[in-house]
Figure 1 (tube, rainbow, N blue to C red):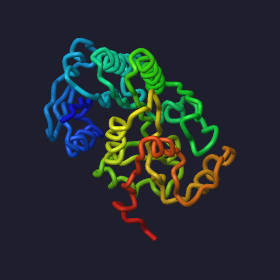
Figure 2: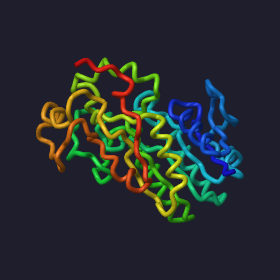
Figure 3: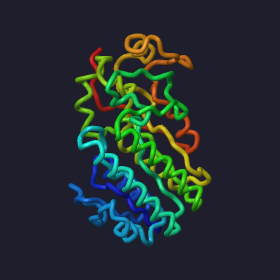
Figure 4: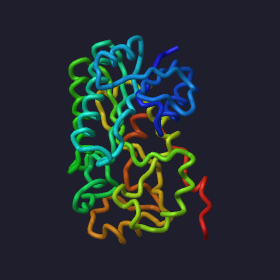
Length: 283
């Protein structure tokens, strides 16, 4: 049985990721600063900014999945967000690489593109927004994610450890679908995230596949559902909110504007949970 350490396993996405690995025969250890509401594996209380503690919790692991972070901009002073997210990721990758762990997956964000938390409203340069789109954040959270991706590249160059950086869209746990009726018909809402989302269970499958897939090197992947979170077709969303933005391919129906094609290709991954399966849509 392979052992995977999941940092931040007590959080919103963490439960789904821990469960996904357990359901597929892995031994899982959750490294977090708090116990989970629903304990389904061993939890080790760990300060990820303490490198010694990180070495301790990762010893004997075959892979590490790093979810733990301050998850948004401006919930903490800027320097606190930056230090926490950068140092915890550095410590996880430094320890994993030195211990000879061969696979790591870290959590980046759509916020790294700069659209989510700008002081002045920004538009994407083109859609569907893919991994080649410039990353132009104005906030310490988005910047921390770019630094973490660069740390992943560095560790891969030094140790050869595969590191996949997941640029997550808005993570939706199953209970959160009850919120969808409040925004699905309003194009102004959620425009800064290009109306994207990803079901936590589908994200969890992507994390597992990133551990199980070989030969990826250090790579960043957008992780999003196949459709937007809106009940408005994608071409209409663009015409309404971003009429001057370049559209690089014909938009069909409600298709995502946060491209997930690279993740689907490299991981042989397919998101399966669509919000329409859980939300009653008025005709």
